[in-house]
Image (cartoon, rainbow, N blue to C red; front, side):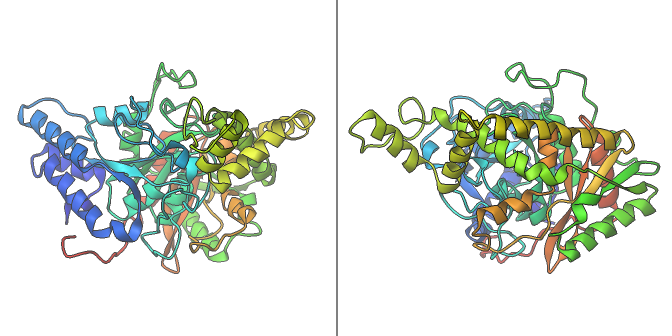
Length: 489
């Protein structure tokens, strides 16, 4: 088995045992990137020299017998919306084309402290607004299982890099499903943590009451390992959880016997591809055979989630992105002759169509005379959606269902923005409620991966990972797609 084929925990163990080195692992991944990146286009920036230097430092520490972190020498990728000191961070937007942060995001810093090696920054929909990476200002990323199809979004570059063997793991971000969506499309594991479990300091903001950072990995153990490294209180983010956190690896193999799982009735209605539904129901049946108690549960306000999400999301985006004015921050046009033209040209040149669309929607929803009718009403319905989950979790340990209504669609297939938004229908409720959820591969339809979604109450990540691992352990869906490679691959 080649080094880039190992999971993160397998590779970390091999490096610590001296069976390979961080330098060898890094070179193996850089060679893999060179061999397949032309097909996948997962990266916006490749940091080969930095990766080699970080790997050298890990090996030096090991040679001196020093203590190293649990991810020491493991090559990773980061979504290009997380700040990286000295490394360009664009959010896939022309607005931040030349932005080089003077500091690391907290999640970035914690992974570096754990010994992980940065291979580069991955592509995304501009400012994380999208579900296909078709909104990137720079390039299209392709699904490693079928390069005529999208990888999902907005963390599509992160998912594609992990699925193609171009990184052992990655970090993505979620506002309305942007970790779980591409994880499902690309056949990897993706976890959206509880709001506040992972610091958002150094994340380029989109919608502050929804944004969250989480791991994207090849298997469930890797997901637990990465979450362990990045979770916890951060004084630089006042929204982070200050309590004691569990060991996410400790109970991973305990199984599901006796757990009560609710199947979300509203997630199996109109619009769901029957073959996707069948794959998910087979996975649910497997968990039942392992001893879980499975019953149907209703989340009655979930049909309103998309309308709520696409009111709150643009409203917060319009506020957060107001800072990009061509004066203090972001792209500045060279063409303006007066102040009004400076604003207009800078923003129209710097932002793409989808970002402009959401800014306009959000500005309208927050405007005088419409605030109560749209934004305030959306917040009230958001509370009802959260109460649905609270009621369900008074009876069940977790809720299960599909991640997306379909498998990965073709590049260019979703020309209507509203049709694209519908792919978030089973995802947005979780973000509105601020609770955790994980996508784990559960089969294939026409050779394309399907994801099983497992949702839990706040701070139940350890239980969700345990359920995901119980399913993963009984199936062989942890695999890499076959890609044509160059001779040096």
